[in-house]
Amino acid sequence: MNEDKPTIHFTNTLGGKKEPFEPLHPPEVTFYSCGPTVYNFAHIGNLRAFVSYDLVRRFLDWRGYDVRHVMNITDVDDKMIRVANEEKISLTAVRERFEAAFLEDLRALNVLAGWGRSSASERAEAGIEAETELPRATEHIDDMLGLVARLTEREIAYRSDDGSVYFGIGRLPGYGRLSGVDQRELKSGARVSHDEYEKEEARDFALWKAWTPGDGDVAWESDYGRGRPGWHLECSAMSMRYLGEELDIHAGGVDLVFPHHENEIAQSEGATGKPFVRTWLHNAHLTVDGQKMAKRLGNVYRLRDLTEERDHDPLAVRYALMAAHYRQPLNFTFDGLKAAAGALARLRNAVVALADRLGSEDHHRRVEAVEEMSADAARRFDVALSDDLNVPEALAAVFDFVGELNKMPDLGAASAKVALDWLRDVDRVLGIGLADAIDRTTHRDADPEAVRIEGLLKEREDARRRKDWARADEIRDELAADGITIEDKPDGTRWHRQP
Ligand SMILES: [Zn+2]
Image (cartoon, rainbow, N blue to C red; front, top):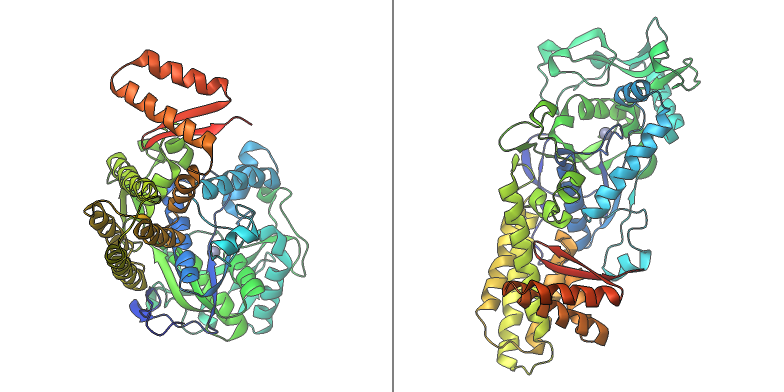
């Protein structure tokens, strides 16, 4: 890594301290984050976690690390089976429905992942090398059984009377140190068979669950008889399969600290005898209007409730989800979302204003001044993000930069280019569509058809402001006749050609 870059620090949930980040084999970083259980649509609380992971990954990419990111898809657990039974459909049908919806959400939120959102060459051009692997639990049953075998060989796991296999929490020292379970409360020998439970119920947990009639046709044959894996086992097995036995970073929502991550540590370290994860990152929870999301309150919002139903820009949702520090609880409100859209519009307007200057003369002193400003802002941006991903402070650096630019009259082409280059770089980390905005506005002049359309849209905008609805409609119809559809969004009008 470059010597004069700030040292990256993360707050490690294990130990609770802010520590310098030191990957095991730099420049490689192995990064595992817990993915969704695809039994339902993701709500914005879930999505906050995925946006947070994306920031970690983009930031490390941007800092020159070679990030290998894996995120699992949980497609077998108690909840999946419950939904399959309720709806009388197969587990695969449940997965297909909600996994597709989840990937759509990620794409809309500009969360990078490796399923073809952008081509490899596009990613390379953007300087992004990493792809996210999205392995499914049901496709790694053998890996999980392999872990069960290792744990039973070491006598850390044992079989119960019904043929299930349990992890004996008293058979491995240190159980509970991530979540701070009260050691006196540990009920070694007592068992808990469901996937989710409270700290007070910390008991031996199921690695392999013997088949019961409630499982229907969800079962795999194994040396332990017909059954299915416990939920926690998949993350140990899949992270090991793709990233090795020791991970640099493991991330998840704070609700996963116990029992999920505690049990992952136990399983992995029990099997390998090596420390499982160097840095644990957990994002705080999300409330809506100061309240916990709950069906009865009608405040469980999915992304499509905000975008399709209420016409919000998905990137404004992304902005709203990441603008608070990831370790701080986030209170989601519609005013906050409006403010996020406004902030995004300010940045996009700055891009448009800069692109407008690309044809004009410049002055070398002004170019130097803008170079210096962007170097200072870049340093401040990096220092902020290196300090445990302080996004609010990083955004402040960007807005201060834009504010300074606005005070400089008549920027010329060279200065505008320096500023645009920096904003494009910022977008590699933030992913809020600035690079797209730059491409759209700077390529505009090259396409005479686009210039004509933009001109008409501007005229329509003026007509609407004068309340000359007849002229505004006329322009819309004229464009429609040419096969151009327009869409009015809170931050301006967009257009696209009908296929
Ligand atoms: Zn997990």
